[in-house]
Image: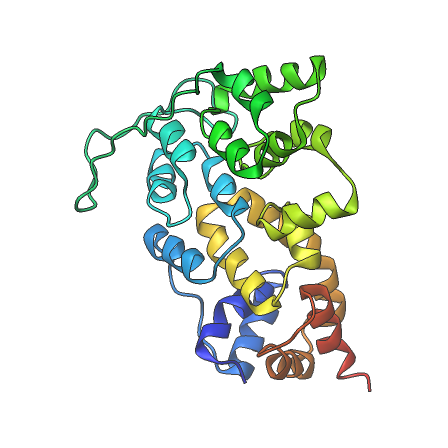
Length: 277
């Protein structure tokens, strides 16, 4: 049966079938109902699970000041993102600046805006002068969320150097339409995936190992419910078709989850197939 740290993954899958069926499966697998999640605990779990960097953007897209505070304190949040959070810049559909708490509850946190000025050649000039990936990443640090339209226009007028384009593309807040301009071939998309830049569909269909992917989505129901909902909508038809209310299929899934090397769809399909053999 499931190990304790597999249970979040199971809870996410069980949320995709009828509640009554899910209750019977839980009794069969001897797992309780999911505990109420706190945002802080969910954020800690995302760090522990080494979730893809895109989850930080998914959290920010809520335009929720409390969630932004959690993103600010995540281990992988870089200085440009911290600067924009402290400026109250919205990442979702909000128009007005977001409120930023004047004081932080976390010890030894000053909430001082990082100083990331453009170099001597200016914002766009610095990107055009980049001759190495290191220098490009240094130049890209000056780009704020409000600068993306300027960057896109500069690239339309004259394509930016390859290193600058890559450094911009690996920023989690790079707008999808701008990132698409920078490259769409397989090597480029593979590098983005390796850098933790993914969309929910890609994460569901290609992410590994499945127990971690599903756990990230489970904790995401608290921190990025809209994106977690997109993932749920993609998976639900397969889960209902392959597992549904079949207790034996769920038991087979329980045996497969630890160390399963495939993807989430492959895991679900294997669980269903085990009862048809």
